[in-house]
Image 1: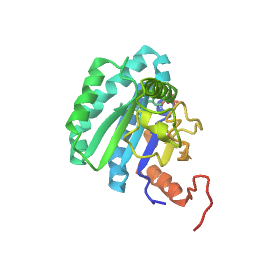
Image 2 (image 1 turned 60 degrees about the horizontal axis):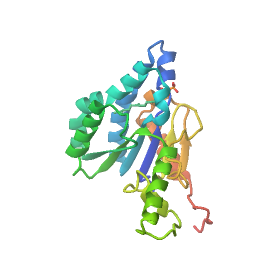
Image 3 (image 1 turned 30 degrees about the vertical axis):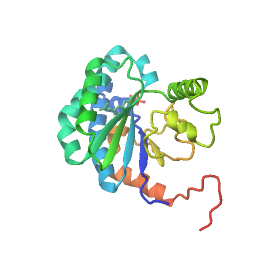
Image 4 (image 1 turned 90 degrees about the vertical axis):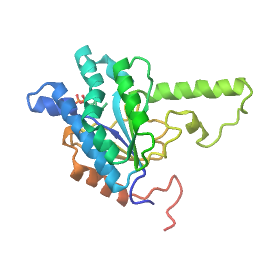
Length: 235
Ligand code: FPP
């Protein structure tokens, strides 16, 4: 087993509780969370991770008060405005998965520019899941697949994990490790198909407190695990 996971996916949870415990507004927690996105992305790249997918906004997050939704949608502007130079210096390629519809145009334009400017970078992909929901993603994939079959472009002979080609993550490596911060032990509609064989790591630490040391703990835990994909350990 590779010691360093190639693809890590993170549910960055606990921003609101982090802020509440400090008597601050929830948005302060998100603001601190953005700084961790920068820190962990650069650290993951230094550790040799090839792809980092972050759950930045779920299809369920629209249910939050409009002020919080607007704040979350303003974060790409702050993030890329503040850190794009460092992202380029670290040879990090930006990508985005999720449904573009409903994301404000201003945020989309900022993402598109970052994606375009970093498209030749090779050290690590930093993939933002924005307006992402795995159930919607699977529904869309089923529609694409069915259309191809109905048009006679392919046989109705799907096997193994071939369906992964119909998901937003089709060009990305398999997810080796999923981390969720803040003590919740749910997948919350995140990468449901892609996590079929992934290692899952849950920590009580809130995302704004998830620093290099906490990331190392997750990597150490991953290294200790044996992934057998349902087979037997032959070592
Ligand atoms: C969950 O915490 C966190 C989010 C819904 C937002 C996460 C987004 C970021 C950290 C920044 C994204 C950055 C960019 C550039 C788009 P919560 O609010 O649900 O916390 P709680 O469960 O304690 O209330």
